[in-house]
Image (tube, rainbow, N blue to C red):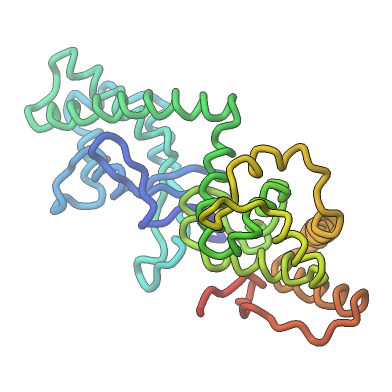
Length: 308
C-alpha cells in the first residue's frame, strides 16, 4: 500500500489550542490528521510516555467501557504518511483523524462529570476542557472570517506589507490593480499554500517575481509615467488621497494588459518552471527582447528554489 504524503502542515506551523500546541497535517487524500504523539502532547501527557500511552489509557479501566464505536474506528484506522521536511526514521509517522482529539476530549469531560476518572486522568480532563473551549472560540472566528471574506483580506494585507519592501515606492499604489488570482496562481504554481504563514515565509520570492513578470516588462516610457502619476507629499511619499482615488481611475492599459497576459499564462501552466519557459518565449517573440534572466532556479517539481 502506498504511503500518503502530507501536502500541508509542518512541525514549525503547529496548531495552538489554549496553551497546547500540536502538529497538524493535511494529507493528499484530503484527511486532516494529528500524530499520536501530537494528541498526547495536546493533553499534556509527560514526554516520557510511550507513543501508545493514550490508546492504552483509553482501553483500560472504566474509560474503556465508555468508548464509542466512532472513537474505536478512528483509533483503528490511523494512516501512515510521509511528513514534509523530515528524513530517516522520522520521515514517516501515523496520523489520526483530527476529530478524534475532540471525541477524546468530550469523553474525558463526560467521565470526569461522572466521577469515574483516576487523579491523573482528571488532569487530562481539565486540559481537555481547555482544548474544547479554544476550539469553540477558533471555530467562531473562522466561521465569521469565512462568511465575511475576511480570511482572504488577511492574506491580501500581508502581501501588501511584504511588497512594500520589494516594490519601488512609486509603484506601490498600482498594486491595487493586481487581482487576487495573480498571487493565488503564483502560489499554486510553486506548490505553496496561500495562507498567512506561507506568505510570510517568502517575501523576497513574491516581490522578485512581481517585479520580473510585470514591472520589468513594461515599456520604459510606461514605467516612467506610472511613477510620475503617483502624487507625492511634501516629504516625497505617495499621498493617501491617491490611494483612495485610484480605484476610480481607469488604470494604465499597458500595466493591466501585462497583468492579464501573465495571469493567463499562470492558468495554462503546470508549475513555475513551465510558466517561465512560456513567459520567456512570449516576451521574446512579441517584444524582440534579448534572453531574459531567470530570477530563480527550480526544483525537480518545477517550483521556485529560494536559495539566494
